[in-house]
Image 1 (spheres, rainbow, N blue to C red):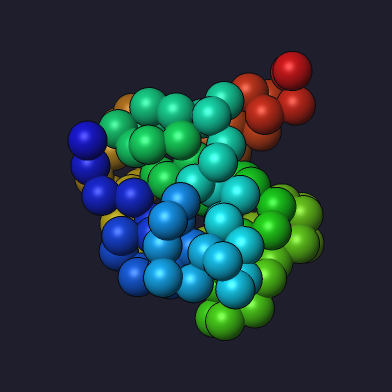
Image 2 (cartoon, rainbow, N blue to C red; image 1 turned 45 degrees about the vertical axis):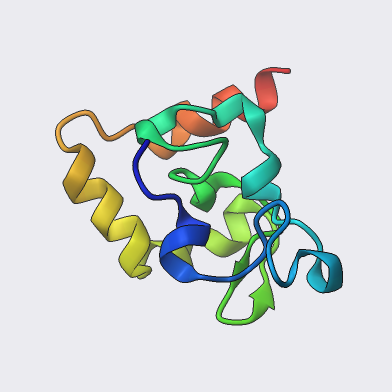
Length: 100
């Protein structure tokens, strides 16, 4: 598997992470419907479509309210480059999350 957002960002909110008990486990680490996307575990390489992730020490809201910040994120940009030309568009990822 490729490196997930919590490994790159070292936020400590992955399951069993240093800050998970205090801040809660990150929803990206728990989102199983996106497991395997871009070679990641759960939504670890598609965190930008998951509400409630931690960015810049602040819990983010819905996809619609947070995506502008995600577009500027170095992790997001690196996944785009690494996965080109198979990078999945947000609409395809969001559809996976809301299908169930």
